[in-house]
Amino acid sequence: MPSRKPIRQFCTLNRWVLTTLLFAVIASGTNAQNASFPGSRSESKSPDGRFVIRNSNSDVEDPAHALRLVDSLNGSSITIYRYGRGVDILWSPTSDAFVINDHEGSNVSHPILFRKPWSTNYTDLREKLIDFLRSKNQAKSALENHHVYFTAQRWLNENEVLCQVSGYGDVDPNGFTSHYVYKLGGGFRPTQ
Image 1 (cartoon, rainbow, N blue to C red):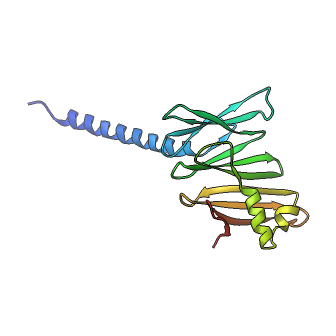
Image 2: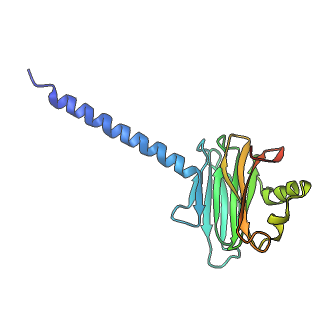
């Protein structure tokens, strides 16, 4: 009777290969959800895999970069945003919203929220946060410093985004950093 040892070794090796491939696929899918453009990657997939944001670069258009949202289910696509320097994409866990952090200058950045149904209409989270800070008489750092960076850091859940505002300048020569939570449809609140 032939030895079963080669068969066991083959099965063990196949299990290891399948596990490694599965881990690689899961890891690449997770990394594909958030992306920075321009860069080595040219697309960012939604967590459910249905939507893809594709970056394109142009030598003749101004601004030089464009983001297209593609629905892989029906093939429709729309140019949702144009930018000049660099952006980060952060998908919501439910794939029904995403934030673009637009790093529009060396001294300024701001987050922009897109929600279903997809269109070129968006919510400028910088404006929303400044309105919130003004209502609390706390807008001086955000408005009067020379370098102010508003960014979405991460999704806390399907309805809330953790945002950060930081910077420095005449008002805060040693710099400042504050965190806030934006609730979709509800507005900003300080972190607790």
